Length: 288
Image (cartoon, rainbow, N blue to C red):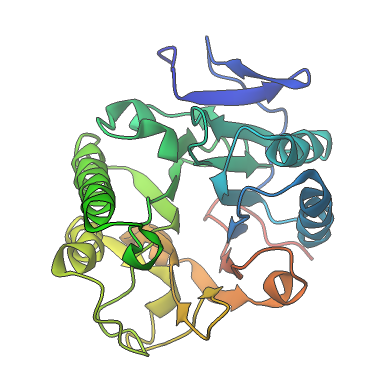
């Protein structure tokens, strides 16, 4: 593993840069994935988030909108103590990133270092329980309603568009293999209900780009028109921003993909969590 400037692991109470792959002992079979935007929590909110995450106990957790702050540090330490291998991006300053916590082993992959724009927005690992690469991402927002000027809005649009293009390019640099791409994409599908005309074609094209690489949306595998929302605003806005895309072989193992609205209803985040359950890999034995 090449030393990475952008991807770090929780070791001994601090985030240490990888010099070599870290290996978890006896990785658990990969059966369940939880994807959740935690909104760079305060320490107080992170305590509630950690309690909720540990009560769910999925095999792999992908968190987005993380930061280098006390709240996210609390989450990372708590998940490590609970037996997860925690790999986190290293967003500088007031930037945001993502975290992957895995009980199924986690050897950092090189995807993050292939990103030529905002690499700290993503985290990537290869599972040790089976040959799957998991990429977690927090795509930049471009919400013009929060921008103070037209010029600022254009900067945010260029930043987001550049990142999405960089992300798709980086995906093409590793051919073959099974892969899961998940997190807060900050885009909506073109058939989104309610419609939202503020989104542009290049944003819809990001999802099409994933599909052109053979990745499939776990949430709509069996119902292409299926609708739900993962983010709810204070003024009635609601969008599906959170996704889990999987390669075709993994899609055959998806048993269920649905949004759990309870953490949002508990005011732990303004996002609901996306939970994806998988059938065991062929070599796994079903529990009795």
